[in-house]
Amino acid sequence: MIAVVVGGAGLGVYALYGAGAAADDRTQNTSVSAGDQKPKVKTGPLSATEVTTTASTFLTSWQQGKVSAAAAATSDTKAAAALLTGWTKDAHLTGVTLTPGARTGDKVPFSVKATVAYKGLSKPLTYGSSLTVVRDTATGKPQVDWTASVVHPALKDGDTLVTGESGTPPIKAVDRDGGEITEDRYPSLGTVLDGLREKYGKKAGGKAGIELRVVRGKDAGSSESEDSDKTLVELSKGTPGTVRTTLDPALQAAAEAQVAKRARSSVVVLRPSTGEILAVANASHGFNTAFQGSLAPGSTMKVVTSSLLIEKGLASADKAHPCPKYFTYGGWKFQNDDKFEIKGGTFKASFARSCNTAFISQAGKLDNDSLTKQAQQVFGLSMNNWAIGVPSFDGSVPVQSAAQKAAELIGQGGVRMNPLNMASVSATVESGTFKQPYLVSPSVDNRTLATASRTMSSGTLSQLRELMAYTAGYGTAAEAMSGVSGNVGAKTGSAEVDGQKKPNGWFTAYRGDLAAAGVVQAGGHGGDTAGPIVAALLKLGG
Image (cartoon, rainbow, N blue to C red; front, side):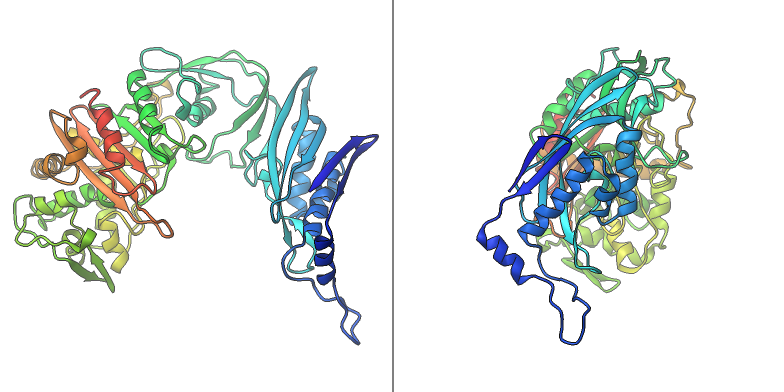
């Protein structure tokens, strides 16, 4: 346990240890071998004394403004010195009080109290952080394992803390009906609001305020897929400019309610005819998985793969298609869920039941870049050129060979997507043409939206819609889509993840002029997990 005494010139930190800890220290003392005056490098687990003493040295030095001493107690003296120097010089933080908590193994939590003071303005700053003590393999000495998050949990390595005029004026984000969007009203939209402010703050006509913020360590020319700067304390409010989004208030509220029912769930709703994003929600609010996630999409990728196979003449909805229990390709033995097989079935039956081997069996007839080209040219994916208005990831379908090429056909291997990407896939099928999703109209800043270089033939499109409609009515998506009427189509997916007991559950679907996709990480089968979330939102319109 570490206790803190504050008084006089600075901070006094002392530790109380039992006899067991002291004895533990004695067993780990550095020894000197006979005839060799060089001490051996200490190895083995850290003692309680080493952890608490190292933590005390670092925290005491930091609080007293002794940057060199604090940095010397870490594993990266240069990076620590730079960030701790900026703590006073750039962030204008004064009167810091650091209070350690109870040690847990090699980790010591601590609370931070300070004052942000800038040009006659001041506000308190209070938060919790933690540090971990490790043993230097070269010297054997204990040291704080340096990472920027030690100074503040919102910091990543390379980030800095700055107080001053905000880099961008504040914004007032509004939905498509003019209603104000706030994080209190829509908890999922915190990261979206940060992104909107960074991109449109200077263009929306507002005036910057004074704030303490995290400035991300990125090049000026980096893409909008990078994390946005983050405001920690606002000393004075600026005058906001207004940014209108495409969000639908009813759908956004419903999406928030749906993801709240499922841990680690995310969903996106689009309008296929325009590409407008109508709703985006995540059960976890720290990272926007719906827009920026990079996850294997599992069998929802079979929508893209099917369009390829139909175009190449390797499959046809109502023609016979193999679906054996197993199929070996590139040295890997692939199988279906529960090792099922379909004897004498059609491709439509294989798609509806999500037969892996029906797709794997065609790998040898495809070029290594066939799926990559299909994703890029028809569905607008994997070209790193979407500009939706806030940070996003537009999917990745790398060129692969052998077993990895086969795995990509069923949404595994190197394929990576998020709900925004997979909602766009369904939207492309529903409308017949890829329209890049967007949250802010391109007319606001005259940006150019991504386009696809070609569309599917009418015959391919017709068959693809038939496959998805059949799956929604009679296949793995039928239970979730029960009660969703009208012109509908759907596809389920489950993506295995190493070290995860249950797969990520995926679901993508459309109904009329709505398309949506969702994922529930470590949730299990997509029809049971993400399916009900997507279906509930599709029922609200169409």
